[in-house]
Length: 604
Ligand SMILES: NC(=O)C1=CN([C@@H]2O[C@H](COP(=O)(O)OP(=O)(O)OC[C@H]3O[C@@H](n4cnc5c(N)ncnc54)[C@H](OP(=O)(O)O)[C@@H]3O)[C@@H](O)[C@H]2O)C=CC1
Ligand SMILES: CC(C)=CCC[C@@H](C)[C@H]1CC=C2C3=C(CC[C@@]21C)[C@@]1(C)CC[C@H](O)C(C)(C)[C@@H]1CC3
Image 1 (cartoon, helix red, strand yellow):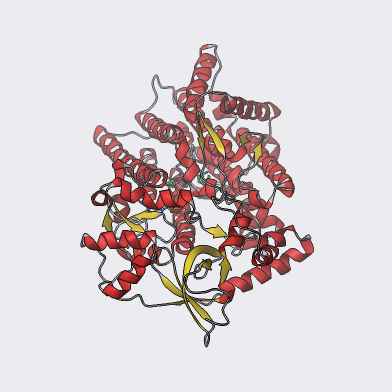
Image 2: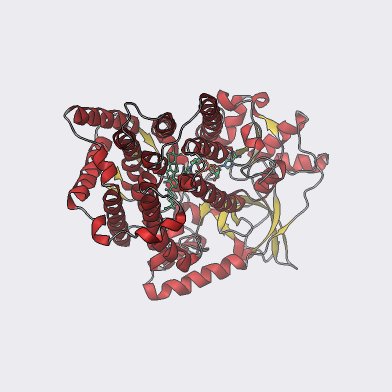
């Protein structure tokens, strides 16, 4: 290879097809005529890459700020690669941002990758060559072949983790900790390449439509005639939507929850690794916060506080929460000016003000050790939801002059309480979710957490106050069973995924088959995760159905949550599939071939 920058055997960083993610690859050869390198990824995938799609590992190591076991002297090559780093582009003056964005898009579009056909699995020469290349993923493939479980015709093997033994499975993780920066893809993306939610116009419309939609929902739920046609006749006067006292109560609630979150009670855990390899610390005490909140509410009720005040002032409560979420989003947008590149959320760094305001520019905004996003996602809205449901239960008894709450109201309260309790009990798992790992904290989540969750998720209980619905014993038994099935699928699927990510050799998931990927992470491909690609979404939707059905079939309004959830999760599935395709490439394609349906078995 006379005129090539890299030689056969060199370990370099190669761009993954169609993305700006770089993984460690080994150079297998260089074709001077086509000027393409043949490289092999950790999972055995061979590709041809242009010179521009290959970077030296030293440049990446320096840039990513990870701790290394061996430090090398600063070479001219490394200095070159640092000066070209996109990190620099975001530090440029705003006038140059859009030029940088175009350059970046161009760069991504220009990636030309030609997948090579892999040699047939039983070609002993090649197998030997792979083995010599000392690649962990190859070694795993070999083990699998020995077990006769290789996936016919595929590049990946479906293997039983149990049969391999825990120690062996943990091997890639161990290596990664020692020296190979493989598990977390190294990304040079500092500016958003693709705009989601319909871009700037889409998010602008969403910011207008979503708050009005919740207001309309609440007006409809609260009036006798909950049909959609009746909405225009009863447009509420704006001044009736505001009450300073209510605003004060909402602020007090937020303050109270923030104090509970700051109490030195509960364990402190580390979040998932950030771009710079560091992990943030989080105090997990959501469950205690729920217990203390319940005690406080109990004492207040005992002292004669009438919770049905929340029902009679529900619109004012919503408006206050909306204003607070708007103010919070503004604060977050402004403070992100001083955030370092590392703290920026990839999705909210487009350079377009409106888009970044919606998506959130900062990934983990913190005031000292107080994580604003983590707090808002789990506390005031979720615990507030339970408080509101309780207020609606009391209001129903008052309005309908009942001695005890209706069975429909009890079911709605119990189902939703279990869901919130489960969320707080497994609070730690939020740290591995898309919202915490990739999404910035902007208007979407601030409004979602503080206004959308507590005021639209409570629509069934609010509706039942004025729209009683009788339930037969059989129907109640059916609803409980339906909820139980949904909960089982939701919990089991989420726990299996969490266990795999936290400890791939966890005995609880050792019976499940997985597909290895180039990043060192595995994808579950049997059990619930073999039924559909998002069993947790399916479980969530079944539960949503179970707590909407007690409201009967007279109006569509109590099904608002279910409709929202289906739309959100279908959209989320698409977003996630897009990210996973970029992250996992052919392993993800293989997974999609094996598990055909996304959320609903046999349907979608
Ligand atoms: N009620 C509501 O309003 C909402 C509820 N939810 C609920 O929150 C929960 C979490 O949702 P969300 O974070 O969106 O989605 P998931 O928990 O499904 O997370 C998706 C991620 O899981 C990993 N993954 C995907 N497939 C596999 C597989 N086969 N094996 C192992 N890992 C896999 C990938 O990340 P990686 O490989 O990087 O780990 C992927 O990016 C769900 O139960 C959902 O229903 C979510 C949104 C709103
Ligand atoms: C239309 C609009 C404004 C959308 C914003 C969406 C948010 C409301 C939801 C996005 C993902 C969420 C999750 C939860 C609450 C709703 C939001 C914030 C969640 C924290 C609720 C508790 C669960 O147990 C959960 C942890 C699985 C869940 C995670 C996702």
